Image 1 (cartoon, one colour):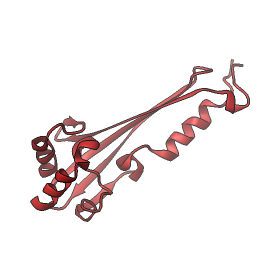
Image 2 (image 1 turned 30 degrees about the vertical axis):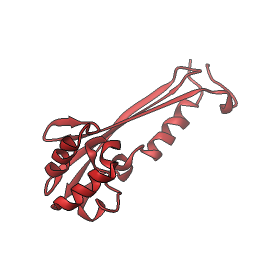
Image 3 (image 1 turned 45 degrees about the vertical axis):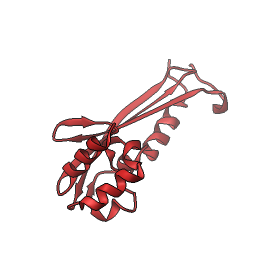
Amino acid sequence: MTYCYPPIYCKLSVVFHQVVVYKGVVREKPTSEEEAREFIKGYSGSHAAVVGSVLVTNLTTGSRRVTWERAEVYFHEIPDEIIDSLIEEGITFKVAGGLMLEHPLTLPFVEAVIGNSDTVMGLPTALTQQFIDEVLQPLKA
């Protein structure tokens, strides 16, 4: 068996990536005010998917776990003044798809989230912890 014990001697790599898919197009962080405005106006009164992936690797043993999760987010109409405020604040340039759902200006316009809220807000913590626990287990020969 290959293992590292105690687990404190293991070296792990945890990688996470998130994108937004809107009408079949993958969206990363917007790169301009125009692109941010286009992204958010598109979501207004519509919906988008948030897709997040996580990869946990035990660098000591080579054991790894990987998966992805998807959640759908439905929006009410988002007023232009809210879009302007979000862009002016700069938060839109720091998140995939240009819209942080938990932001106080955005949250009132989220109609529904279908799926895991961790998938929408970032790293899926329960799944990541499960993968860490699994890659720390001894490998069977």
